[in-house]
Amino acid sequence: MRVLLVIPKRNTYFILPAPDIGVAYIARAALNAGAEVEVLDAHKDNIPPQKFKDFLKDKHYDLIAFKCLSIDVYKVLEYCRIIKEYNKDTVTVLGGPHPSALPVHALRSLDVDYVIRGEGELGITLLLKDMMSFNGRIPSNRKEKIPCLAYRDDDTGSVRLNPIVFEEKLDNLDFPAWHLFKIKEYPQLPGPAGRFLPVITSRGCPSICTFCSSDTIHGRQIRTRSPEHVIEEIKWIVKNFNLQQVSIFDNNFTFHKEHVMRFCDLYMKNEFPVKFDVPQGVRLDRIDKDIVKMLDKAGCIFMGIGVESGLQETLKMVKKATTPHMIEEKIRMIKENSSMEVMGLFILGFPHETEEMVLKTIDFALRLPIDYAAFTIFTPFPGTALFDQMIGEGYFALDELNWEELLLDRVTFKHKKIDADRLKRLQKKAYLRFYFRPSKVMFFARIMFQEFSFMTYLRRFISILKT
Ligand code: B12
Ligand code: SF4
Image (cartoon, rainbow, N blue to C red; front, side, top):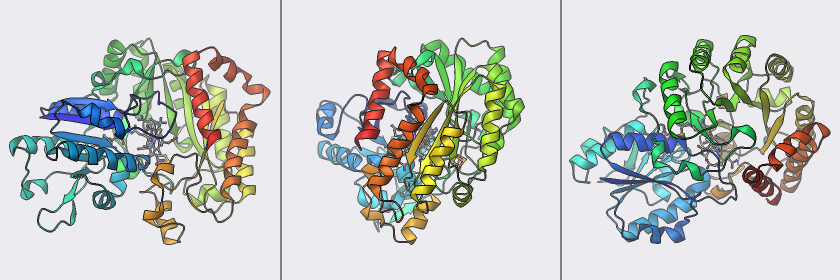
């Protein structure tokens, strides 16, 4: 059984330094199920649908599966059409955030055979095993037993959604199949960080932030790996992939204090030659002085913090369960008790916000003792409470959205209080005001001396300024 996993080509200049860990986990599950597996990062390798036909030439795959964010929908549609033209017997599968949030829409509007919702390891394993057992044609009474599978009923054509099942014991999942990726070809991070690989120590998040769709993939219950299992993985990737850094990509890494403390303790004991960071945003209500000191001691050099807004009203509306006062106090505590660099992650232009409110968030960002800031424009992602609420309030209809725009740098709906051009200008202003200050000169000095990283940042800035 030959399987190809594809990360689609995207409409952005920015090539991610991070190879996709979700796809690497799916690749491992497919290998363990007994398939021969290839991974194609069509974004990095610049293989848009027009070139995909050439790529497929003289090759045979039984199943081709795509990682699908909302921005990928139109491209995936084209890839799938080409696959079916080339060989109609090739089975096509979608997974990832977009089809997990909108499985019925995906199966009705895209010519794919299956969607696997949520975490895909259990679903892809059983799907492949059944394909092997039944020579590619899985009977209906077997399909309905495959967890997380969404498919069209053979008789009626209506979409059927099998229940979502999570792997409760994450230590049961084998390490991501990084050997199937061309790791050396991914861009490096600036400074000593260099080449890195992501690691997940836990999945899920019990918070209910209305702009976040992470529960459609990982659910609301936190499941942790044993720190020992995580450390084994880090030993393996450090030994085999010539890394300068490891990045923890958890949704809520610090949720269980004992988990973080034990992880840090083992990290220190192993005397790894590489540092680590937590870039995806920790929750400030789950971090205290002990955790900060321990992270610092263990070698954590950088932390992302999901600040979102400087306004009490907005934080309350989006159910973030933090306050501006708490944010400021906790970030000062982190800076006073560690040498970690901190990046604040902000969202500008929630539907209820006015221009004055956005400006207040920018002022707040400038006041905080953070080293970096990322300002994204509020984007309604499927699977979030705000997405459903906005459809209910008539902001947009499902089929009106231009999925390719859901990039966080564009105004994707008609904002009732701020003009789209103005909001875009506010985002640019936020970056300019934050970074073009004397205190930020070091940031530019650091990236200027690294040609590769400089180009990565330059591409990112250009894509923000151009849109
Ligand atoms: C880390 C992260 C990033 C990192 C790294 C991305 C990467 N290459 O992996 C960075 C910061 C670079 C990033 C960038 C972007 N991201 Co991002 N990111 C995340 C985050 C926080 C965690 C993803 C992760 O690693 N999870 C852990 C792994 C194990 O889970 P996973 O990747 O989801 O994979 C599982 C399932 O999805 C499924 N699955 C995944 N792929 C496949 C494929 C098949 C065939 C199958 C069957 C199943 C399957 O099984 C996997 C294993 O269980 C998520 C939020 C979240 N919590 O999910 C957002 C998230 C995925 N990102 C999002 C977005 C929008 C983006 C950007 C477009 C934003 C931008 N600035 O332009 C870019 C896109 C670039 C890109 N190529 O991914 C959205 C996607 C929403 C949507 N509907 O499209 C999310 C959900 C956050 C949100 N706003 O709600 N991101
Ligand atoms: S934004 Fe972060 S804290 Fe809020 S629900 Fe999503 S993952 Fe959890």
